Image 1: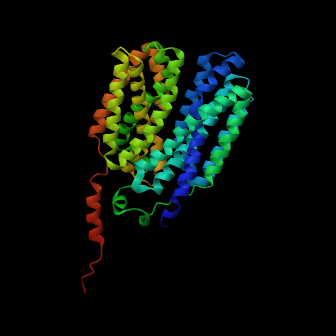
Image 2 (image 1 turned 180 degrees about the horizontal axis):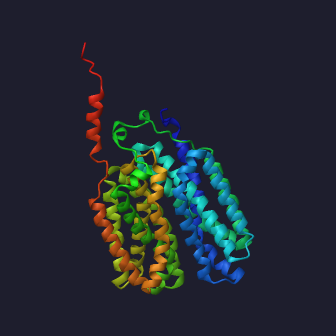
Length: 411
């Protein structure tokens, strides 16, 4: 079966709608203080919810590929949208922290991760010749959903209260993800659908991928990139107040700045990765991040320097998140993309949890930034030297195919 290129853009539209709905979870910080005021809980206890959501999201990607094989992409995304929406709707009825952790944390995060990894990987299969750009469009939509819903959810919280806001948020997300799923179709990878270059690349199973050193090196790079960005996103306002001496209102502007540059980085670096080496793009992003966190640690910060560093880290984090699905496809093939990227994507989950724990252990922003800088330099060296495990395969495969070809000149 050939890929029907004429209808691919409808699938892009469907995936964008799905990803925008999924990206709304990044508005969670808006709910922290209202929940504290509503239930008299500790802020730190409520804030843990988003760490649980992020970890559940990453954990779900381990199993999403297998569910897709059983259910099909459209049914799986539709079911994930229903479960995610239901988790948010039921969160409007919570009365205890453990209910919040289970519903808004585990249920919402797991459903989000299931739809995220499968819709993204499926779209990349539809555009094997533009993996970076199409990944940027998909993951950029995820970031755009976060940016738009910062205003929608803030308005809901103010107008109907935090509990009712969960209800309306859940209904909107359910409609977006389920509605978008009807435009999504499964990409069937066949020899007819791929270029000769793609045919000659080996499609690794998860077990085969885990036997390569490259899988673990990519995990280290992804972990470093994710921890850098996720830690900054969680405490950017506090950095502005503590390190740059900004007032709360001015520092709060950094939250919107992060969202804008995070989304921009996804589209720009995703597109660049199709023209240049993807690993060179990642290397550049790691270098910029290392320099930015070092400046935040040692320089005397003013308004402009603080925002420049924050914008740079957010831009590079968004870009790395975008380019990595394409790198995994380049290294290990498209056939098992959902499953293979699901393994590497665990770097996101561990990165989400590690920043806060490391900061608590080291005692503040500056030592944590220095550790992040060191990790980014190590990952930069890895990215500059790592090569795909099947790099030598095309020539061998061409020779093998040539030897098996019948001699048309004989007789």
